[in-house]
Length: 389
Image (cartoon, rainbow, N blue to C red; front, side, top):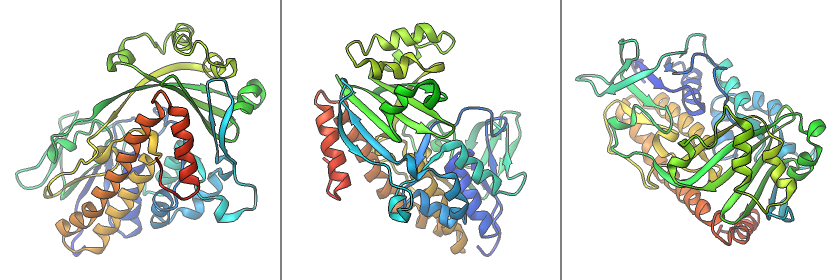
């Protein structure tokens, strides 16, 4: 741009940090305002597979692809689909060592490792930790943030990268996330190869889906010899907030959760029974599939703030990073701010809509009474280059 705009980014997730990094690569400063007190203030979640056309493309634009490679785990790219009797109904093997780029089509990386990579790539002070955003306004002249301590920050560009319950989204859209009808309960097993060898064998080197009875147990290898488990159940939204799954009482929480999988194979039930630490219930929400907004001067959104979807397209983090990269490139290559924002939003809307539609379809299909068969057909179609069901 001909004059350096003042850019405020709400949220230090993967999308916001990718935007800040791409801007930095092009000599444009930005400030990221983050609620968390530090980079280690809370768990960052599980493992991500980096798609070559989105997540890895974003890393390329950020100048971090080579630094990403040694942190990634292409050997953890296996996929297994099981029934509730633990019989393997479909399997995509992990790539063999030495298969090169073809074998690293979607290499895994822990979300924390990826976030730390992005944070290390930014100038000190770019992220303002412990800065909770109380509200946002369009200005009268420029958009502004009001922080929890009462300070007001004005900017030429305000970017909402602050997730599902974005404080920036109301400036451009009246849409709110809607409960999907499905809730996760997160579990974690540590030192699986030594302490839980049967679980390690069941899950394999990657991600395992066990589907039946309109429920699921989804397990994924993480770095550090850990397996993260998501028990998926159809339940009213209030169920996940009712206290039945109380992180402070893991023994009772395990029993209540196991009661929902009474006739499942004991090896699968061990994913819950042998878990370490608290169990955390998380309702799954989504924005409307076709969510978009009219161009608002000086304000835009990316990632979950723009297109929150369920995790069943495996696209959320990848799209957030691509959003951040493409917004950064648009700002770097257009002299006019509004022209840059239009150039970013125009392709982002249909791209996000396609992924959100796939995510919604997969949620419905996988947790259908015949979900195991439908999921198998979906994975076969995807691996053969055909259209998913």
